[in-house]
Length: 316
Image (cartoon, rainbow, N blue to C red):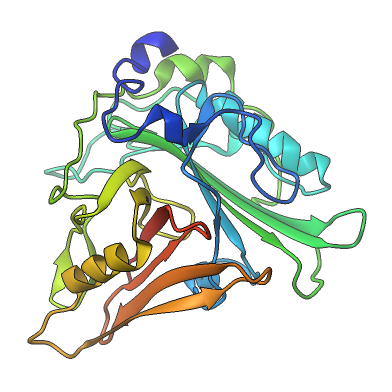
C-alpha cells in the first residue's frame, strides 16, 4: 500500500518543512504545485544564458521548479498535466509512465527490466519514470511550453518541471504525441519501496556522479554556508539532477562549488560566476561552466532574493 511505500519519506533530514510549499502554491504560467507534492524552496527563474534545455525541443525556458513527491505520484502527475491541458497544452496523463531498471545489473538479465505502467512492474525494475513535454498558445496568444519529469525509486521521488513563457510563436508540440490516459489504479501498489534518507551535512555528497569536473567524473559535496533543502536524488527532464540549497550568501556558495569543479592543475574547463539581471530587473548570481573534449555542463544559479541556489549538471 502507498502508506507503507512512503515510510521514511516524511522524516527526511535533508530539508526544512518550513521551506517546503504545499499544493496550490503558484509555479508559473498559471500552474500550481499539484496534490501529493511539496515545492522545494522557490521557483527558480532561469538565467538567459543557460543551455540545459538545448537537449529538448526548441524553446526559451524561464523557470524551473523541483517538487518532492510525498503522495500518490500518478495523482500528482495527472493533477499537473490536467492544469497544463486546461491551458490548452496537449499534456499526456500518467499512462505515459514506465517501469524500468535504473541501476546496473552484474550480469545480462534473463527477465524483463522495463515495461509500460499499464502492466505489472517487472521484478527487476527499480524505478518509475514519467516524462512529457507540451507547447502551445494561451488564449491571449502567449506561447507556453511545459516539460515534466517524475522519477520514483528507493532513494527519492521528485517532480521536475521546466516552464517557458513567451518567445517566438511556434506550432503546437507534444511528446508523446498521443495521450494514453491515466495509469491504472493497480500501479499504485507496485511502486518501489522508499527508504529513509540520511541527513546531508557540509562535506557530504549531493546529487549524482557527473563529468562536469575538470579532473573528470566526480560528485559534488555540500559546500560550507549551505543547507540541502531537497532534490538531487533523481534526474530532471534535461539534467542529471536538480538540488536546492538554502544559503545566506549565494555568491560565496557558488564560489565554493566552482572551487570543487576547477582543478588548479588543469585548464580544460571553463567556469565563471556572474551577476545577471532578469527581465524584471531582479539580480541573480550564476555559475556556469563546461569541460572541453567530452566533458559535462554545469548550471547553478540563485533565486532573486539570494536565499536559495539551484545546482544542476548535465553529462555529455
